[in-house]
Length: 371
Image 1 (cartoon, rainbow, N blue to C red):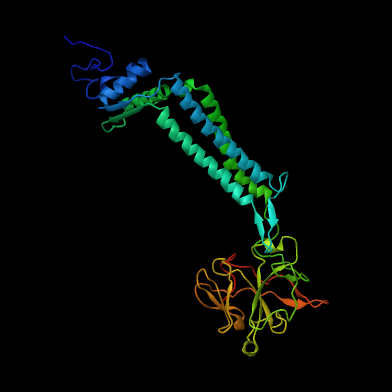
Image 2: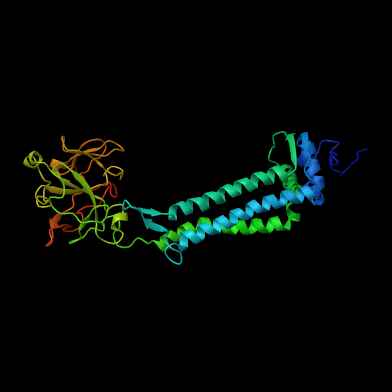
């Protein structure tokens, strides 16, 4: 006589070979599995999937004083992450609009800004706070157990029992009963998401207008200023020297593509000077001006060897011959440094005759040829 026993862990009526014989999916029909509650499915899956509990470390009972203390600690870190995320959004979108720009000029004439450090501090703090909160949640609120399990075969039985196990784990974590933590976690998630999405606001806040990669603040009649804001005229430099100058326009000394090297050549350099074609009148007497942005990777070209007439990039060792139109003679750069056309105004100060005739630095990799 064949007996059937539909209880969890039994053969489910599969004492003899047949339609319900040959494994969990054969032992239990979808209807039988659907009729079981989550606890039965969890136990059944653990038994038949070969789960062996090696160690169980107890945690504080839900509602106890220790559990409440741990919950408040985790909630605090999630709340901190939310506040820092909101602070990032405010700083990122509000700077220069309803918040100050946090910029000031120091004695050397350069500008200092708190904008970027504030963005880094708020986003970095939010990420750290989320990480700390997750670690504390796992260590102090989740049940700890060490178990081993046989490899799953991906059957319908495995899918059903695994889902029950996951939901059982959620219940065991006590998260559904920690209303304050769930609320703070939801608000933090919204703030954290807003922080990430706000980065797209940069396209609205700082839209590319005109031709930003092909133009600079230099224009006809714009004076050349030293880093201390004073204009410069012929005779202010010694032969063989280099001075870094900026355009006399608002924000000109902060534009990444506006820095220019004003070089006064020595007499022997003038004798060997071979200007680039079409740029014979770009200089003034023994003065020439070239962009300070390397055409290889955009690094600042700041070294000048007057004995060899070479301008050097300290980052990747590109070298440019100032007597040959700043043509690259060594290193990875393949394009000459753009030359700024200059002249002298009525008061005797250096001014630009216009913008650079070509884009600055590596903005366009396919323009220009080795001169």
